[in-house]
Amino acid sequence: MRHPLFAVGLKERLIRPLAVEDLVPVLAAAMADGRLVHETVAVTGPETLSLAEGARRVAGVLGRTVVIARAPVWVHTSSSPGSSSAR
Image (cartoon, rainbow, N blue to C red; front, side, top):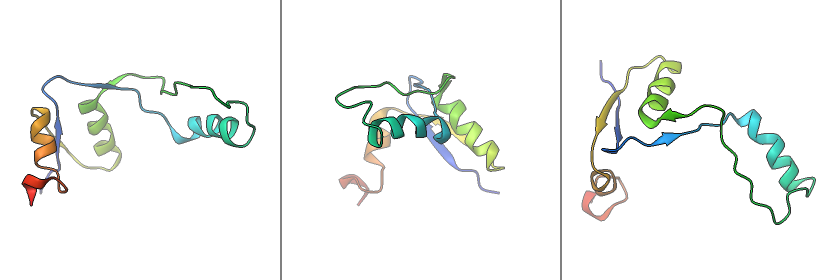
């Protein structure tokens, strides 16, 4: 069985994922109600995770296993499908 590979940087980044249902009231206030005109609002989830842990959780929900690989940022950008070196 093949496992997806998820690359993270050498220094682990922290993320604060947000559920869509938690974002909807903020979007409604910004777009429909006009309550957030000319306002900047930080919208983050309640829990801080490493990017690797976030990938593991998504894989778990999908019933998959993921392989986490640490690599410098330049590896991510140079191997992406749209980059000039990947052509």
